[in-house]
Length: 61
Image (cartoon, rainbow, N blue to C red; front, side, top):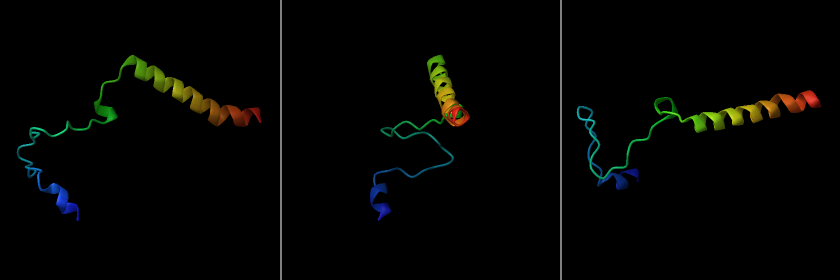
């Protein structure tokens, strides 16, 4: 059943990892991506809110 969708895809050749024309770009994961300062700032805000919820609420109760 899953073989039905592979008809128009070229065979993968590990010796030539070139991306065929018309294929979507490869995904990138966070450790290999560059971060902007706004993304770092947003992550820091999320960290502070998460720590406040995790530790602040139980301390207040």
